[in-house]
Length: 127
Image (tube, rainbow, N blue to C red):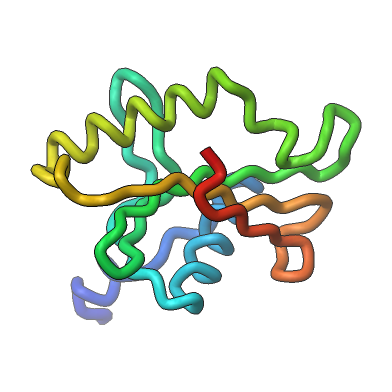
């Protein structure tokens, strides 16, 4: 019988491409030296896919995946409405966690066609 702790610490299998992209983005950013803080922060305003700490800066990350460019590539899917929701959600997260005085930035991890490192683009301070 497995100990309970190993069951609780086990990563969930991704259910869809969005989950796979978020897991790949998380692994990539960890390898870049960023410290993981939280995944999928939900609030009434919107959602933040990933939150990391880069030295003393909180990094709010939007992850986008496009299997094809029929409706534009991953970067083109970052509309003003989505960016506004992420900004407002981040402001709420900072407030709830008493981090309002900390510096922050907004990054995007983009995957076009496939979810792998060869198809990954990291946009720092994108908005």
